[in-house]
Amino acid sequence: RYDPVATCGHTGSGDLFAWRCDQFLKDYPTTAGLYFDISEGRSCYNTLHGHGGADAFGKSYSSSNLLSLRDFFLRVCRIVRSHGPDKILFTHAHNRFVPFVHGLGDLWLPGEQYNHYWIKNVDSFYTDGIPLEEWQSAYSAEAHGCAYAMHCALWMYPELALGKPKGPR
Image (cartoon, rainbow, N blue to C red; front, side):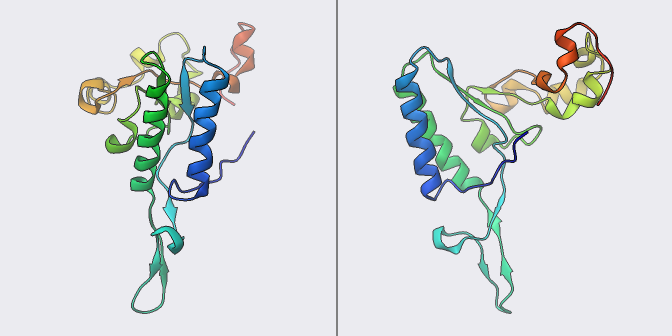
Protein backbone atom coordinates (compact mmCIF):
# COMPACT_ATOMS: atom_id res chain seq x y z
CA ARG A 1 0.00 0.00 0.00
CA TYR A 2 1.16 3.50 -0.69
CA ASP A 3 -0.29 6.90 -0.02
CA PRO A 4 0.05 9.42 -2.82
CA VAL A 5 1.26 12.83 -1.78
CA ALA A 6 -0.03 15.59 -3.99
CA THR A 7 2.62 17.87 -5.40
CA CYS A 8 2.33 20.66 -7.87
CA GLY A 9 4.02 20.58 -11.27
CA HIS A 10 5.10 24.19 -10.78
CA THR A 11 7.46 23.29 -7.93
CA GLY A 12 10.79 21.59 -7.63
CA SER A 13 8.96 18.27 -7.47
CA GLY A 14 7.81 18.77 -11.08
CA ASP A 15 11.42 19.40 -12.12
CA LEU A 16 12.60 16.34 -10.21
CA PHE A 17 9.92 14.08 -11.69
CA ALA A 18 10.63 15.34 -15.22
CA TRP A 19 14.35 14.68 -14.74
CA ARG A 20 13.63 11.21 -13.36
CA CYS A 21 11.37 10.41 -16.33
CA ASP A 22 14.12 11.34 -18.76
CA GLN A 23 16.75 9.46 -16.77
CA PHE A 24 14.56 6.35 -16.49
CA LEU A 25 14.01 6.22 -20.24
CA LYS A 26 17.77 6.66 -20.81
CA ASP A 27 18.64 3.92 -18.31
CA TYR A 28 15.98 1.50 -19.60
CA PRO A 29 15.65 2.16 -23.35
CA THR A 30 13.53 -0.95 -23.99
CA THR A 31 10.78 0.32 -21.68
CA ALA A 32 7.49 0.84 -23.55
CA GLY A 33 6.85 4.21 -21.94
CA LEU A 34 5.79 5.89 -18.73
CA TYR A 35 2.72 5.30 -16.54
CA PHE A 36 1.33 7.92 -14.19
CA ASP A 37 -1.03 6.63 -11.51
CA ILE A 38 -3.48 8.90 -9.69
CA SER A 39 -2.74 11.83 -12.01
CA GLU A 40 -5.78 13.80 -10.97
CA GLY A 41 -6.39 17.43 -10.23
CA ARG A 42 -6.02 18.60 -6.67
CA SER A 43 -6.33 21.79 -4.68
CA CYS A 44 -3.21 23.76 -3.92
CA TYR A 45 -2.81 26.48 -1.26
CA ASN A 46 0.81 27.36 -2.04
CA THR A 47 0.97 31.02 -3.02
CA LEU A 48 4.73 30.76 -3.68
CA HIS A 49 4.04 29.32 -7.12
CA GLY A 50 0.76 31.01 -7.98
CA HIS A 51 -1.95 28.98 -6.28
CA GLY A 52 -4.34 29.83 -3.51
CA GLY A 53 -4.32 33.08 -1.62
CA ALA A 54 -6.40 35.05 0.82
CA ASP A 55 -9.71 36.71 0.05
CA ALA A 56 -10.76 40.25 1.05
CA PHE A 57 -11.75 38.94 4.49
CA GLY A 58 -8.42 37.24 5.11
CA LYS A 59 -9.76 33.73 4.64
CA SER A 60 -7.35 31.48 2.76
CA TYR A 61 -8.48 29.63 -0.33
CA SER A 62 -7.03 27.02 -2.63
CA SER A 63 -7.02 26.81 -6.39
CA SER A 64 -6.86 23.94 -8.84
CA ASN A 65 -3.53 22.52 -9.95
CA LEU A 66 -4.94 21.30 -13.29
CA LEU A 67 -3.10 23.91 -15.38
CA SER A 68 0.12 23.04 -13.57
CA LEU A 69 -0.58 19.36 -14.17
CA ARG A 70 -1.10 20.13 -17.86
CA ASP A 71 2.24 21.97 -18.00
CA PHE A 72 3.89 19.00 -16.29
CA PHE A 73 2.41 16.50 -18.75
CA LEU A 74 3.44 18.70 -21.68
CA ARG A 75 7.00 18.45 -20.36
CA VAL A 76 6.68 14.69 -19.89
CA CYS A 77 5.21 14.28 -23.40
CA ARG A 78 8.24 16.06 -24.88
CA ILE A 79 10.53 13.82 -22.84
CA VAL A 80 8.71 10.63 -23.89
CA ARG A 81 8.74 11.68 -27.58
CA SER A 82 12.45 12.54 -27.40
CA HIS A 83 13.14 8.87 -26.66
CA GLY A 84 11.48 7.65 -29.83
CA PRO A 85 8.13 7.46 -31.60
CA ASP A 86 7.45 4.02 -30.11
CA LYS A 87 7.30 5.31 -26.50
CA ILE A 88 3.87 5.67 -24.88
CA LEU A 89 2.56 7.91 -22.12
CA PHE A 90 -0.07 6.13 -20.00
CA THR A 91 -2.25 8.17 -17.61
CA HIS A 92 -4.68 7.02 -14.95
CA ALA A 93 -6.91 8.83 -12.47
CA HIS A 94 -9.83 6.39 -12.07
CA ASN A 95 -12.77 8.09 -13.81
CA ARG A 96 -11.50 11.67 -13.48
CA PHE A 97 -10.53 12.33 -17.10
CA VAL A 98 -9.70 15.96 -17.85
CA PRO A 99 -9.32 16.38 -21.63
CA PHE A 100 -6.73 19.17 -21.62
CA VAL A 101 -4.54 17.18 -19.19
CA HIS A 102 -5.06 13.46 -19.73
CA GLY A 103 -5.73 13.82 -23.46
CA LEU A 104 -2.02 14.59 -23.82
CA GLY A 105 -1.26 10.95 -23.10
CA ASP A 106 -1.34 8.16 -25.62
CA LEU A 107 -3.46 5.86 -23.49
CA TRP A 108 -6.00 6.62 -20.76
CA LEU A 109 -6.66 3.83 -18.26
CA PRO A 110 -10.01 4.23 -16.49
CA GLY A 111 -11.96 1.42 -14.89
CA GLU A 112 -10.38 0.82 -11.50
CA GLN A 113 -13.46 2.42 -9.95
CA TYR A 114 -15.37 -0.70 -11.04
CA ASN A 115 -13.24 -3.22 -9.13
CA HIS A 116 -15.95 -4.06 -6.60
CA TYR A 117 -18.36 -4.85 -9.47
CA TRP A 118 -15.82 -6.40 -11.83
CA ILE A 119 -14.69 -9.05 -9.35
CA LYS A 120 -18.28 -10.38 -9.20
CA ASN A 121 -18.33 -10.94 -12.98
CA VAL A 122 -14.72 -11.30 -14.12
CA ASP A 123 -15.60 -12.83 -17.49
CA SER A 124 -17.94 -10.19 -18.89
CA PHE A 125 -18.41 -7.23 -16.55
CA TYR A 126 -16.90 -4.69 -18.96
CA THR A 127 -19.27 -5.76 -21.74
CA ASP A 128 -22.36 -6.52 -19.64
CA GLY A 129 -22.04 -4.29 -16.60
CA ILE A 130 -21.30 -0.86 -18.06
CA PRO A 131 -24.24 0.83 -19.81
CA LEU A 132 -23.89 1.57 -23.54
CA GLU A 133 -24.40 5.30 -22.89
CA GLU A 134 -21.37 5.29 -20.61
CA TRP A 135 -19.24 3.56 -23.26
CA GLN A 136 -20.37 6.10 -25.86
CA SER A 137 -19.62 9.13 -23.70
CA ALA A 138 -17.22 8.58 -20.80
CA TYR A 139 -15.12 5.98 -22.64
CA SER A 140 -15.19 7.27 -26.20
CA ALA A 141 -11.66 7.52 -27.57
CA GLU A 142 -12.91 9.68 -30.44
CA ALA A 143 -14.56 12.16 -28.09
CA HIS A 144 -11.56 12.39 -25.77
CA GLY A 145 -8.70 12.34 -28.25
CA CYS A 146 -6.72 9.43 -26.82
CA ALA A 147 -6.97 5.66 -26.74
CA TYR A 148 -8.64 3.89 -23.82
CA ALA A 149 -7.93 0.59 -22.11
CA MET A 150 -9.91 -0.49 -19.07
CA HIS A 151 -7.75 -0.78 -15.98
CA CYS A 152 -8.54 -3.32 -13.34
CA ALA A 153 -6.38 -3.58 -10.25
CA LEU A 154 -5.55 -7.26 -10.48
CA TRP A 155 -2.94 -6.83 -7.76
CA MET A 156 -5.84 -6.39 -5.34
CA TYR A 157 -7.06 -9.90 -6.14
CA PRO A 158 -4.16 -12.38 -5.98
CA GLU A 159 -6.62 -15.28 -5.86
CA LEU A 160 -7.43 -14.61 -9.55
CA ALA A 161 -3.90 -15.67 -10.43
CA LEU A 162 -4.71 -19.00 -8.83
CA GLY A 163 -7.99 -19.28 -10.73
CA LYS A 164 -10.14 -19.10 -7.62
CA PRO A 165 -12.16 -15.85 -7.52
CA LYS A 166 -13.50 -15.35 -3.99
CA GLY A 167 -15.68 -12.28 -4.45
CA PRO A 168 -15.29 -8.66 -3.42
CA ARG A 169 -12.89 -7.59 -0.72
